[in-house]
Image (cartoon, rainbow, N blue to C red; front, side, top):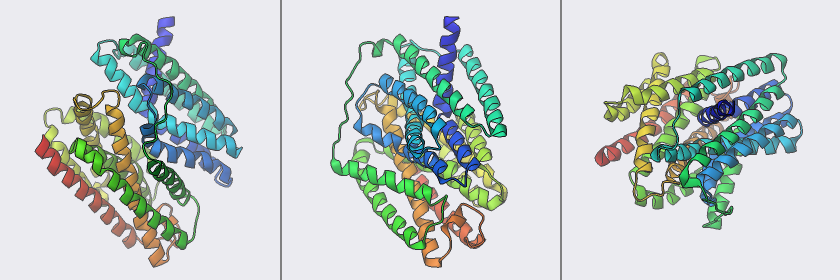
Length: 435
């Protein structure tokens, strides 16, 4: 019985690590959609979005073993889920959103580090029983979410989420206790601030992303749009400047990792807003499904033709320019991300110049930079347009009468896709030279 429970906990850990970004996000979004007329329920969603986007950048200030951080991410998931039971209170809603955001951001890279260490030392293997426990957990999630949505008792979902994070916490401890590398490896929590200026920049990014997310939910003046866009440009330039030092050490792998974040943001964030407006229905689940299928199939389909991944990426961006091939283009982008992700993992984890404990963290930190940079470029573009044409910026995210015209929407789509295409082409050039 004990073995069955342990396998279940480890299976739940693997599921949350793979889907931990999406599940809390979906629950908090559902909570907001059920209570749109009460602004306090937007706070957890806003905080989760902000700290999920920037969580990996925070790890540059923390020096702890991956095993400890994996436990901490699951513990944050438990605390965040329980706090969401009192989301009607802004204090609990904000705390819950912050903790769930950090848990969503941290659980996968730290689990990937621990799991890779176990595989490398032949001390951990994922088997069919783990897969079965994952399937059972998915079925349980779907049943509870269906009941919670129909009865509008979303607290059931967060209770289940707290239970799953607790199971993942126990599962993570079981795994790390079996790994010789982590036995006796203990460090006191240490927060290392290399530069207070870096900390100020990070805090500014937190505030800016919070404001950006807020302006997608509530109408603000065009003057505020302009101020936000100027702040975004300044922070974007600072981000670009401080990446120069990283590129000197890891080029062109650093370029590849940032490109991964740019493409992921294009598919999982920008394309959802763009396609929802373009096709007049909520495309969230459709785009997410396309991404998951493409991500998983990518390494299989291109196993013997990995050098095709960049041409497929560029072709996918071109196909995304046209309505009738839009989702085919997104599928090719997802295939690229899945294939490139596998290659990037191998390149980083076997790099002799990198500490294996921080290899995946560096990858996700750089991806985070790409993700945030893509958001800043997108939001700067639409805020400038809304200011100088005197239209409502909310129209880029919702169907409203005083929003942008179809011509303006397509012009923005063409510009954003062009920016991603140019960055991908530059990355392709240098990555091909390296390979």
